[in-house]
Picture 1 (tube, rainbow, N blue to C red):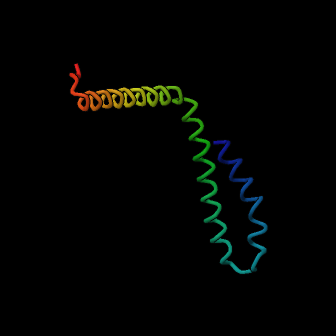
Picture 2 (cartoon, rainbow, N blue to C red):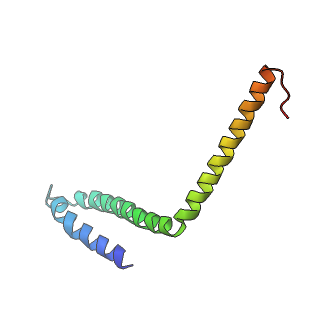
Picture 3 (spheres, rainbow, N blue to C red):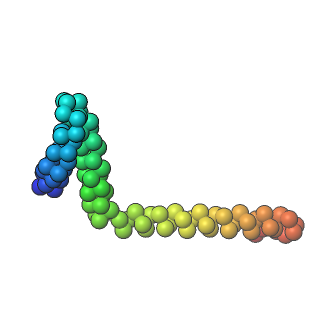
Length: 92
């Protein structure tokens, strides 16, 4: 929760002065808060994504590698079968 509060304070204080002083009307505030919300969601998504990868990264990589190995093996077997069909050889 401290990360979110720090990011919120930095973005509000860092960006609000320029956007409110631009045109002098109240419409600029709506655009500022929309941009602020999008930036906050992107930053929070990155933070939580990194935390998720720290916790589950090894299992994700192991599952991806085993799936890749299975697909490569299936492709090799299929190519061997196709080659044996062209040469009229028995597959087994």
